[in-house]
Amino acid sequence: MTLSPTVENYLKHLFTEQQDSDAELLPMGKLAAALAVTPGTATTMVKTLADAGLVTYEPRGGVRLTARGEQHALNVIRRHRVVELFLVKVLGLDWSEVHAEAEKLEHAISEKVLEKLDELLGRPDCDPHGDPIPRATGKLAVMQFKSLMECELGLPQRIMRVLGQDTGFLQTLHRLELVPGAKVTVQTRAEFTDSVNVKTAGGKTTALGASAAAKILVQPA
Amino acid sequence: MTLSPTVENYLKHLFTEQQDSDAELLPMGKLAAALAVTPGTATTMVKTLADAGLVTYEPRGGVRLTARGEQHALNVIRRHRVVELFLVKVLGLDWSEVHAEAEKLEHAISEKVLEKLDELLGRPDCDPHGDPIPRATGKLAVMQFKSLMECELGLPQRIMRVLGQDTGFLQTLHRLELVPGAKVTVQTRAEFTDSVNVKTAGGKTTALGASAAAKILVQPA
DNA sequence: GTTTTTACTTTGACTACTCAAAGTATCTAA
DNA sequence: TTAGATACTTTGAGTAGTCAAAGTAAAAAC
Ligand SMILES: [Mn+2]
Ligand SMILES: [Mn+2]
Ligand SMILES: [Mn+2]
Ligand SMILES: [Mn+2]
Image (tube, rainbow over all chains, first blue to last red; front, top):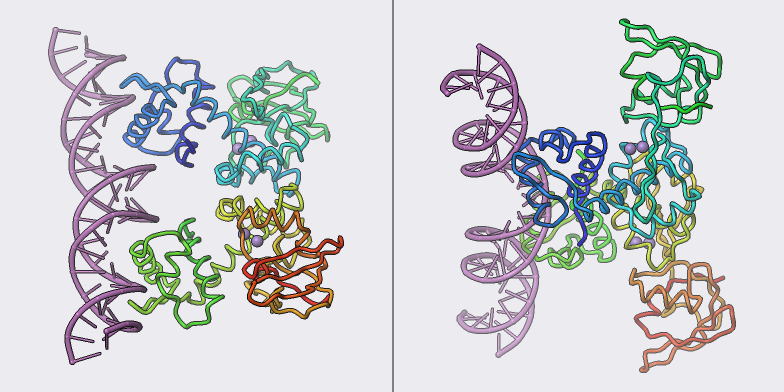
């Protein structure tokens, strides 16, 4: 019962896509897009996963992880995020580049090595992007943060999480000191111009577009 | 020009088999046995590697790495051995189990991560079994040690290297304190009974069969 | 110098994964 | 309530890697 890297990727993306779209079934098109494969490829694979008892599949309806599929998905995500943190904390890689590295390593890490990494890192709760790390038991903390688009104006906020893995986006955020742990204050939100003015701890003020601001999640400091 | 894990394994085994058999060409049968595939599979793959310029192939003669193939092989071996040392030194895994782990990880480590690991470990020369680690440039130290079957009797020796990766064998050596770095003295070599008597630093004396003794390489202490 | 054995190569078939393109169900909109 | 668009499935084909078994060259034995 050892899953191929391909199957692990299907389960992982199935989980994350399922997470941020509260519908019963995930449409095949969404899954195919997330995996960057053609719809036909996704259909074929999902039927195989259904036969293996990892998903339930409704033709022309969509797909959903079973409890067993979800456990496997959470284990892959755990490996991915522990590895990301290891690469940043121990090896000193830039947080903007570790996602790509972890995409490969997550399929090569044994349970034993994962446990040792987790121990070395002090049983961390979050990866370098603020994404929660599932516990070895499969439990995943669900945190509800507001984004810079929704949080209160003028009140100091702490950045808790950054959504998205694009290297350029993350490098820019690093340059602007908009990383998890940093303190920021949203000064103004301009209507119609789609722009948010943010003051960082360093005192600098930056304008962010709505799509960027929505990816930065905060909590009152 | 990124090689698949399968191709990397062919190149790696080609290199090591080529090393310890000084013939011009490596017979296909040896390669097939080393990779645990059928001869037909090895033939097919070797023809592909020849087309890619990684080996030269003489039908019914044998196979040999080109300079390019050798560089790739050395890089894979470097990744394997650096990873093994990392697993022992940093994560605290047992030296008997790291080979299996490294077999998977060696294909998932980027050049950047490899460099960071090498740095973290202090640019090591050898892996936990005493196997030399190729330099980033591709240079591999060739060391000529005597085994416990050949070394001088009664003279203290330091264990420099242990050949073979079998978990049970390595666990036993660990229990007997016959690991790289340990000091030992060969007291007697019994003819006909195929047995060698070895005294360890702890003062205990152990009888080793010829095949085991031949795998333990030493140097006068 | 033939025969037999051994080592190797070739062939045909299979699994896992993928895409392009043709076919079909369902939803939307007139 | 039918026409068209959309989303999905099916089919046919291709790549990478593998094995079993049939075929062949070379070496060994006689
Ligand atoms: Mn990631
Ligand atoms: Mn992450
Ligand atoms: Mn090894
Ligand atoms: Mn080793």
